[in-house]
Image (tube, rainbow, N blue to C red):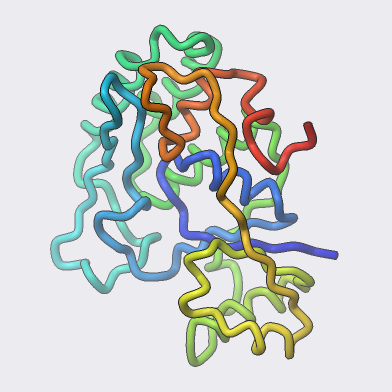
Length: 234
């Protein structure tokens, strides 16, 4: 039974995003769709004393938004790389496993000059998958023939090209998904449950905060990170 999931690429996503990837056989980066501002595509949170801060990649949107697709968006300058790396270094230097993974993230930030947001996100996702031991196949929605009258039909047509048996979705998709259409095509729909995550040793607590980049989990727990996720066999 082949299980497939599709989500837009996000910047250094939270642990739930990687659980989602690890629960499917093929994960499709659904980046041919419209870019949305103030979303997770180009930003995420890290833990700091007293709460969280945003790390945001500056995106050139003039003349493009709101019509351009995610995979068409470019960064407006490369200064964000140094700023983000310095923030991670400053706030996580005392984390138990910062030194173990610092070189990997330093290279992603400081030894790369990729301009396209989708490709930046992909590189981080691929590197983090490797750290966590996730071997799911990554694909782009643009690799497939995109056609259909609405969102449901477009997704079904991509899934059929992948010979999908089970389609995994996040709870937000309940607002538009028509399960009957998928059932007619022989595709079973399953819903991701993001609740019930255990707490882990986190810097600057209390309060403990789940909704931060997975980088927080990696720097704080290192090789034990999968133990605090839901998709790995304990």
